Length: 105
Image (tube, rainbow, N blue to C red):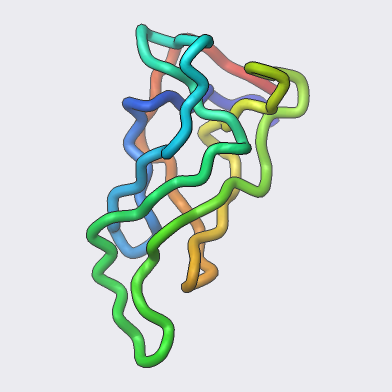
């Protein structure tokens, strides 16, 4: 399904409201003047308020779906509707705001 490409400036949060940022964006491909994010880049989550017994808050996340036709540096780019899994909770990420000029599939 087509969706807008995620870039470093996109607002991405864990399901509990923690702020997520990519650790390794692709520095060679820019959208709106900011590097795009590929599926290979892990995300770090800060400020997750979820503290259940024995499971802890979201700390990192990895995208499990991405674009099928758009690559950056040989890796699929992450789209606004891509899915991710947070560790250690197993919940997902929400891409709330991103650029609205470049769409991928």
